[in-house]
Image (cartoon, rainbow, N blue to C red; front, side, top):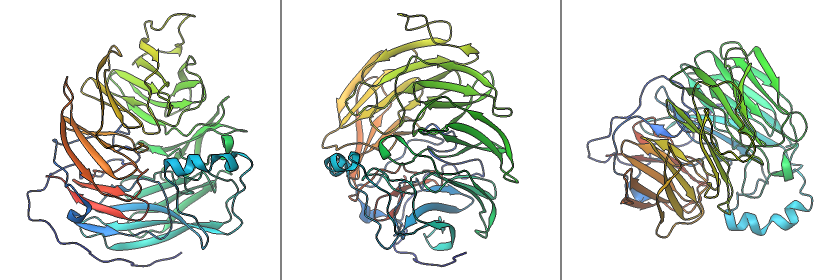
Length: 447
């Protein structure tokens, strides 16, 4: 295993009153401790530019995996190679698609996948562990990376699932030692876009959604030992959605969005609780939920994606009869206005959906549009939106961050510009904003 301390403290602490956010040992992974982009704490202002960073870290290699904080550390997954290309922005990726769809092949050069732990107080590298070395077996979209899945941390463990090399790895957060490791195999993804579904966890288990072109499944593993607890085959093709542990008013469920299927499973047994099949196509976005309602929104860069709002506490096939858009289990469903690549956020009765340079606010209980506004100067959005107190934030790929009020009319609270290329969703678990660009990780104060 590789150990190194790479970068020291690069910035001076700003003299300010810090925002006291989530700092506990609860599970934290893609889109935060709730898995739906809602962070505990009050609304806080964000610096206007990268020069206000408390510290910076430049990873070795690339990855769109979100930074994940826990136990005084920040965990960063990356893939590196002597010939690894920098991910393209949205327009660059689209420009390359003609040759890419014509038959892109995986690189022959070996890649090294690593997880690095940084000290949240100063950005110093505490340890780096080598997870896997080998040549990738599948290609990916020019804008994707080979380290796009966000780790999940719980207590003294952090788990990485890297679909591009088929490795599920659990590490000790203090030492970086590998506690257990599973080889789940590498499966082809549709049109060679690559992988992106992150693991999720509850108090005892870690869950992996592996929707692919040949042998799709969802499985649960013991967080303690890595033993496979259950596995369910899924009759679906490729999706890139991350499972959600939905702790609703009735029970706890594991909800997955897949190819023409939204389904719920019992986290303890893997038994399917319900399914909904009236949405067509694969998902890049992940579900959002509160105590009573789950929103599944199909991503579509052309703004034509579908929505469904599912009430908690139901079982069986929830798909309405032909022509119906609602029923006892379905609050509402509609087509059009769906998100781009980033997942929407459901907070305080409103659903916020970003697509290209537009942000739409919907009434979560009815699906009615409350407002729709262009974000001034925004580019394409790949990172998922997030909520903090009475504010909602959207980060575009050029590093422009827009903070808006969760109100019945559009109100822009602040705008920042951090530069770099951003497809990674930020982390707020340290009471600071951890922002991963293609070139560096920024730690910014929240005030």
